[in-house]
Length: 436
Image (cartoon, rainbow, N blue to C red; front, side, top):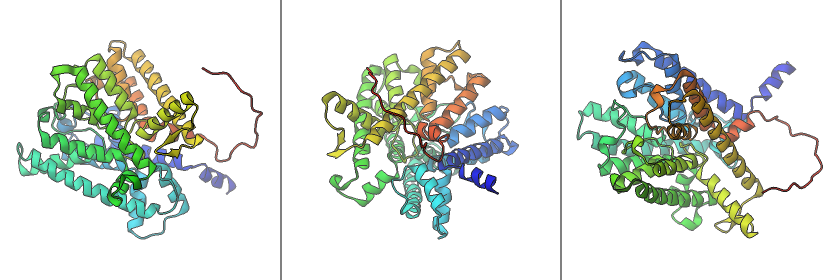
């Protein structure tokens, strides 16, 4: 009895979240392997089904199959469900169901959701999750209507409704999948203003995070926003504007300003394209990789190392260089937050370098820039690719599957999964060490 209790206690929130995502991935793999899910154009084996399911649950968008041509309507419906669950999180959806059923949420369930969505306290989680789900459906409804208007110009009513549903879920959850077939993404809509701005609206809304949207809808003054919301809005605006200008300068006359703006938006972990990724210059690809690595914001459907992490990193560097305290919007940033930001960036860079080396060893014939682009896309759960995904070997696919999984959970979640539940009782003597 005691042994069983100890095993139960070992299931920390981080481990439960990791196991939850893994369970959904394997269920999705099984469903995608069913004959009813496949058109029969190409045979989808276990590895390709696992890769596609992982990419959907981890809201990445990389794929070794053509979702539009190789999956039936049922298979595409499975993808929609996987993207929605992956974007919101299985624990969030589970707590939402409990909250709507008016059953009391236990302390343990609160702890799991707090870990999953980076919620600051343990109070009000049930009502917060309910608002998250309602807001998600409202935003997706608006995006779906606008997307339908665009698709109705080229398709029948039924096809337009299905395209709008799939595109809206993929956009808001920053997944990047499309069902047009042929791997064209949104290239045919590169000059369509409504399509570009509808997709951008959904991607940015999903990438903001629910805490930010709560402030935006609940408070009408920037001064009344929380520090988190102020940082997210500021960093998002800087990255979108700066990314647009830099990408346009890097690509020159071959790219329109609208395409540059959309590339800056989609690099924030969305994965859609209105410009061929293989046509990026060296500078353009590097800018895209930096934007991908930074990613979206905490508590959002997007990935990456997060905008707030880089904000804290920049503030910490400035404070160290000037000898002043690290602050943001006249609020002192705790030392614990500064330390955590450095750890997250370090772990992210370590994972990025390690996977890049691994892929380079497994795929010696693929140019290193393409491998670096693919690796960054996977670790930041973006989904952009120069086109090498379908031709990767089995070992490379497995490595990217693991990379997408780690990227979705986040470096800190992976690191704390193995942490003991009790802190060590031993404290070692302190001694300084020269660095730099």
